[in-house]
Image (tube, rainbow, N blue to C red):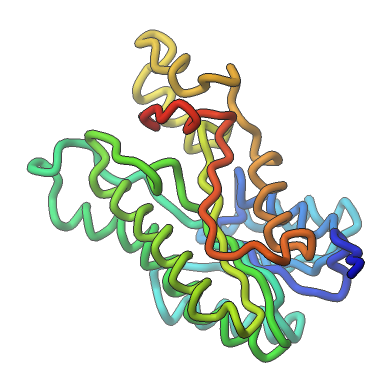
Amino acid sequence: MTYNTYDMSGRVALVTGAGSGIGRASAQLFAARGARVVVADLAEAGGMETVDLIASAGGTARFCKLDAASEPSVKAMIDFALQAFGRLDFAHNHVGHPGPEGHITDVSLEDFEHCHRLNTVSCFLGLKYEIPCMLKVGGGAIVNTGSLASLIGSPGLSAYVSAKHGVAGLTRTAALEFATRKIRVNAICPGATDTPMMRRAMDKWNVEATGMLKQWVEPIGRFGTPQEQAEGAVWLCSDAASFITGQVFPIDGGHMAGNRSPE
């Protein structure tokens, strides 16, 4: 069997959290591979900038404002995608939030639940409404964004770690439920990547002065780029990955090879 593995012409991709960072890079890469793209984000300015970047490169994209933790908003996003492009073939569910810091005994229930809504519930809602659209066109592929915190614990980040473990569980379960119906579901788990969220964390924790920076980028010795993470996500949606489903992939410059903490 021969595939034109990276030609996504005629198909439609949806990327949530596409207004910056990895989500933006993913949306741009889907478009570069020929897909028409729904750019979804709560931040309208960032989302529109992503659309403009895609258009300036010759691609096709439309912006949809999204509150990924709201079921009506997710349903409206799917309706928007179908009205704009008539189908859905690929989705990258990228919305997330680092959540509160502190020991479990110090985290409020409100903050814990808020973190789960933005990470796990947003992923659940995406899967719930994306999969039926893909079934109508005979199949599709979905990538969720987890974290190294989907794979191991991290003291002081109980809400985030448990939420991202939830993303891993949803990914595996959805993959099993729909494997025979030509829906593939995988997750990427980014290591330290040069995104706006990472830069805010670096400033907050003063990682260079504390020596945390060296730990974050071991062993490869540098940050990943949003483009490198997007390459993983879009590849998992492509025909080149047609036998891969239910997997949770670290894209981390070898960080997990030494079982290091993501802190």
